[in-house]
Length: 412
Length: 151
Image 1 (cartoon, each protein chain N blue to C red):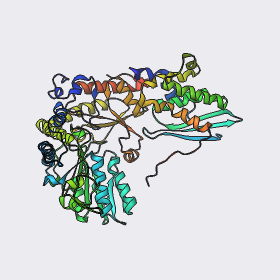
Image 2: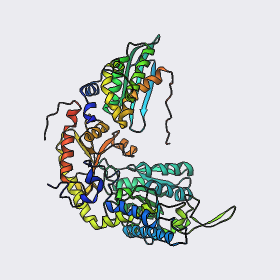
Image 3: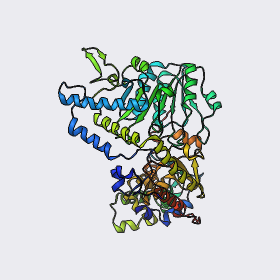
Image 4: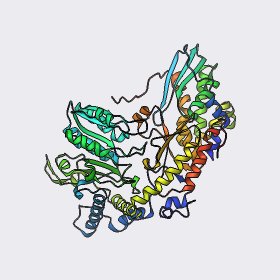
């Protein structure tokens, strides 16, 4: 059985190397390999100056690091050009930028915004705001209890008035890949823009914006082994060019007079203020590391761990897993409930055994309501987790109801 | 591990078999208590006559700690004068802050089983939900709180 010592990636992660935690909250944020931490440190030690501002050597060097990161992101998601890559703080900021600079400008009363019921709050609240301000109608794309979106539900969701679709590539609760190509083709027929929340997909599956055909795509660095505080918005150039800036101020202008300004070209128009260049350098290192491991290897390992966990959980009475029966349709995410035990208690008891899982509504309260639960627990696996860790997780879950005073018989 | 200490028998017993978790039709003081961040939610229902808590109950949904703590609280305050209940609430809140003497702790009876929660910052809100709601209800701060309307 694979353990901490013979997982070949384990040693790359300093925290996992010295902390005994069994970290199964990777969908919330990944751990970072040493090369990412090193890249941030190197930026400050060797390249630190304000990028794009100075005409001196060090500022040029900082700019080069920052722009190199942009190029790496462009290649990762196969965008047409680096100008289509906007650095933000995180997925939430990327989605807000889209809502404010595109949604508020181009949606009007009577238009429909279609959002799926499984959206993270960060891909719902910005659209609630746009709907309120423009009098556009917010409409929900429903899903089955196991997370599938059917053709009927798509037909029901779309109408002739659909002008924007906001949807997760992979839900942070189900872990299932949504039918984005089908959604894009339905949106195209109606001239609607598609905003894709790729926070949970980019870390697990190859993402190609041209192949998907989406108009906007958002993800965070920190779920992708990168630093916190750096995120990405991809936008189709044609749309980004006509959109007004989200934030205004320094570094996003060509010229300013007392009463007006000419905004900078893409992508700088959307990057007001001093940027997170060290974060971008860290993200670049993370992408290189991830490519070295390879999406295939990541998928293979995560599916093996998910398979072990899924079949183990199914054997424990009173445990219910949400989503597909197939481990390969979970992107490493297993959301579950235990009869008679509140998810916060599940998480606290697992924590007592040194295991970190998420518990709560996962920032997806409308989905929880749709599933008829108030909250759930979620274990999410990464390629650096081990079979031993999954076994320890299953053993701990098996004992939870007994610890809560139920007279269940031990099965392990 | 603190976890194993605070999921003790007193807590699990009150969570699985709460004596006071039911409706109370004759209640004349009802207040909702919510922890927005974790979704713990109770309605505290009291029958208060001549400054005395004649009866009390709660309904709601939440983790074992929030629900058991509310049940233990009602065990303790039913039949007491309002001032006495407020004094206990103060003791409880101070226990959670870790500033209670051994002698004071005895006054809390079974509620003292929750004292280890003070080592778990994330769960403090759960333990104090019932007590905060009680304080607010008895002090006359009857309001629905800052509800967020997303419509």
